[in-house]
Image (cartoon, rainbow, N blue to C red; front, side, top):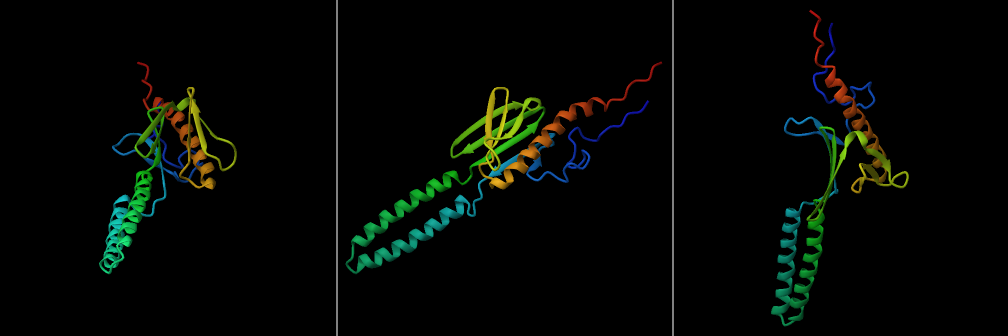
Length: 195
């Protein structure tokens, strides 16, 4: 008696009857773990380090001009430049604190983990993958609500509204594939021949 075995317990994208050509949002977990991870981030065109460098350049230019005016007898210009730079610095600090905000969804070992990173706060919700529902929160284009085990979490804040439905469909497909994975691993061990 022979059995067909799969090389991995997690099906490759598109392996389930061509339902998906590739995972659009997900990536395989690092470190050899079996599973998928979705990382949804803000679209930031400048990193906090680059922003700090730009702010230092702005300070240098503004203070140079203010000192030149102060040298010629217009001393209030220096005070106004200082207030301006403090306000701009405060606004850029608020931006930099939230530049790395993200949502991370991890599907591995029969568990779905949703993590929200907002500033210095981190919120984590765990679900059993077999009991998870993935639905739009209010309708087309709204946030994607993940619920199960008496918990719920909304994801998709950092995606355009037209990309939230494809994310929900990909999450559903990955959950179906993970539910089928234990059945595939159970058929991997060949049955022993009767003696």
